[in-house]
Length: 330
Image 1 (cartoon, rainbow, N blue to C red):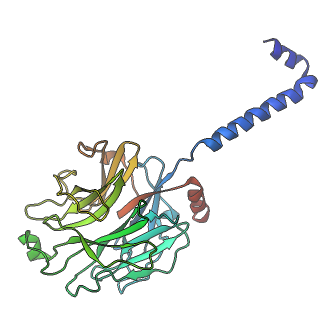
Image 2: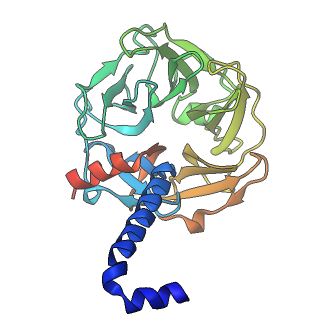
Image 3: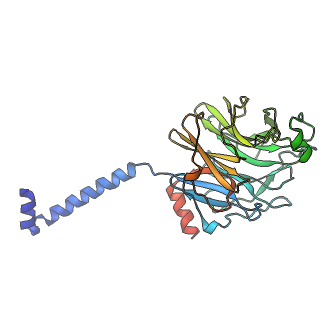
């Protein structure tokens, strides 16, 4: 109290002291702020319509409310394959710091699209990876994704393909109508220049698509869509493996509800898992959450995503990277 009275009664004497105190407090605040880790920004890569206009991006601070960037227009126009589509875009940050993306480039091609970027703004020349070129009866390559195994510095690219006659027909109704009988296949690479031969990754004994795999400690978790139509499934299930390339366990029951769901993607927030998926017959997105991967709560009514969003993936970027996106895409 006496100090305050002295300062107020002799401003000339104490003005420099007040300035010094203020500067010291400011320095301490700045140091504390610099030592606080910057919060990441969540990103959602997705496509709209048939994927003809290319890559769309949305962002979120909380994983619930998502806002489209660039007025929901395309960040990258598809250039590969005869169809020139960019469906199911999957983006990850690699061990090299680059963003690597793969996508479905056609309904019927034997390859998938690939490109990389340092900042999500400037992209490499697009390539088509001919992953099923050696399978004459392969009908398609759908919903490719990438997972990076930091322990062995290796990327695995995986997707769903139907090879006519390769597996038993366990879903006669679907086979009669569409003749699709998908399994999940993969290749590996360390540098996106040389690739391993294509191999079978996952055969649960039924038609499956839309696998997404994330590391969880020393294990890997696969979320995927059970495509069985008869008896009707069309839901999301889980399988586990000790190695990225498997073998993966037999899946348990569905984690999604009484609706058709596809294109799962995951977000981990501390102990909380959020799984987003496309309720494609309802033309909207859904989400469920869990802390133990066993008991799931539907939070579809808590999320808000851009209108018309379709199958994509969630990843993280820094605040500095996000600021650059905003500056260049007002």
